[in-house]
Image 1 (cartoon, helix red, strand yellow):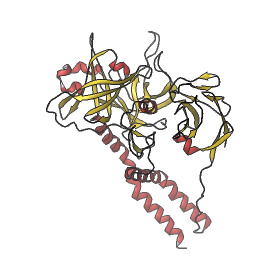
Image 2 (tube, rainbow, N blue to C red; image 1 turned 120 degrees about the vertical axis):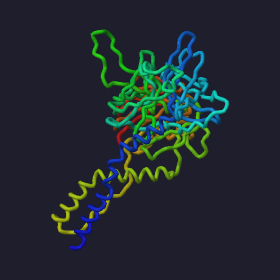
Image 3 (cartoon, one colour; image 1 turned 45 degrees about the horizontal axis):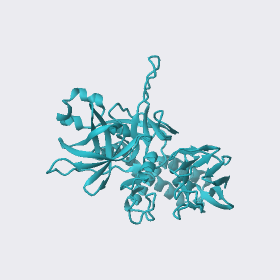
Length: 427
């Protein structure tokens, strides 16, 4: 008779203790955006004829130089590039040089060096890249410098010229596609956070303060008869950005999970694997996991109170069922040249790499394969394969994939890595 009220009161107490955490989301988002905003800069492109502007963000640092990410079309045909930031009412300027630019992906990485001789310390934190599954309805914010807002300023001599704007919205959908006729297929995020010309290259930020995309384009009317797109804006996803950056050997932070899973990813990072993950959990991960537990309990608290009370009244017993144990089973079996390997859902969500490199998850001894040839992964419960820029290509059902693009597949798909057939079976 004592056990019943004890369990009921304990759950009720836990529910009301955690209830205030529900109201922190908006405050957390605001705090994250204020921090990210310090790393968002305006690109000024001095061309042979005329001047253009765009947006971008600091994603890393190399000694005294900063690593800055933007769109290719923002820096295209540049004679000189300058990037400006506004801090405490003062403009901080950098000279920019192009480290790498991809017209097909419409992405570019710049190196920034301070222009002023006696600079005030630029207070910022590099924006982490979110290389993870992106879900519909997620809250996001677009930061950047829409050119139309310049109408009310005095141009570059006005500090307000370098003050960013922020708009809020949600993820509408995520798909593989092209932005522009000649661009490469990649993961595209469609969202509702308003952007305008000048926002190109600016970050799309999630509630964790991570970059889930690089704002790139707005659908335009093809003719006067077309209806203008409302609430439709496109960004190259954090996953597409991550794949692009991997080959450049630049030091950036990459997130492969939720708010807690921040990992430094660098070509020279000690103790880190090639995908930027490490073997041990950091304190940030532990704190984040606890926070996620809080939110989960709050969300389930009302159900738990009602459920436990009903269970106690109906059963009249204090017995609590033991939790189920056991490791998650495999969901896919991959066979290569007579050798098969079972892959779990967790492994596929992280991504399984194929190649002749010994660090590949599935190593294949073939001189035709690249060291890192392809990646198999789950996204929104769908199975995809992605070519990692291999030399001899990845073929799906007779069609060769473009480099660094992904294709949805199933167990009936005929997949060939260079000259090696890949067989997929359930479980």
